[in-house]
Length: 434
Image (cartoon, rainbow, N blue to C red):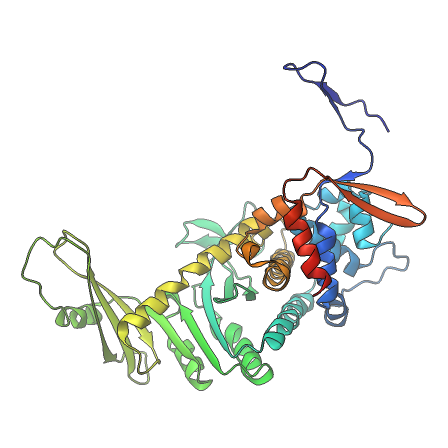
């Protein structure tokens, strides 16, 4: 069908641009994602776990099907509900979702409006069961859990939004946990904007620890966290479950005096290179019920007179202090995981006035993040495993595709000049044998 919208280029008037190219799509890699989800039993798990409240009599789109649509749109990079209006009759999307047409923006908004706190818990359960397939099949016995909090900006009167002094802005303050080795998003919880970093960390973490230990038989677990998580309740939780931890402590006068007593003085000055000294000592804060081991790093940059101490509390025994410090500093990778989840999968999207809907959107980001993370782990060739979602969209998902129907069959015909076709079919081949 022709269109009234067209444009002639001034640098070459023989070139005319119009939107009458027929049934084309730029998301030719999305069926591969759906194929992976099917092979990893996402849909049976979804149907068993998530039950939406829905008392409508005549259904064109079930709540479950609309949520699936939102999930695939998110993976494809469409972060707004109204994108569904443009995709309503997109044949690649309709064939991938096995529907005559996609749900419209109002239908998708009504789905989100129906979300309940029970659905939020169901999303958490679905995520856990989905990841269990990976941990069970890979027979993983060691998990490093990185705890952190992040910030989601709000720009209105969102329920639960408040000023956070650390970030110096209004928003939410979610709690997150990642597997440091695989990058998998283990758990998330949206919280009000003004809560402290460690607020609710014990009820957040304990079910995860119990599941890993009792259901998945993970024998070695390490918890890492910055000084915001330096609270006795977390230490005691880890000790109860015999879980190791390395958590940074905030400096205080007493710790600083102890650090000063460990300094080995180098008489030569000025110092021409970075100097680090390591040690460990027993320490008991006033709020602690017992002594714990604190690892110390005293660091002095070149040209400086004084040392800067770093304190890490741990229950790991028989490991030299320098290794403990390196182990703690490796948690810096978590910032990349959070950035990927927020910028790539829009988990910080907070455009609803209701807290529960914003938490549902956060879980939409978590689930889509893990689908791609698992797909990278299991079916991407080694050269592609470190790709970010931006690269994946560019080289795997955003493939120009012509849709042709013939003899009851649907053919997705890719652009034969697509630069990354070799990567595309490399994934296709591995997916076929998965």
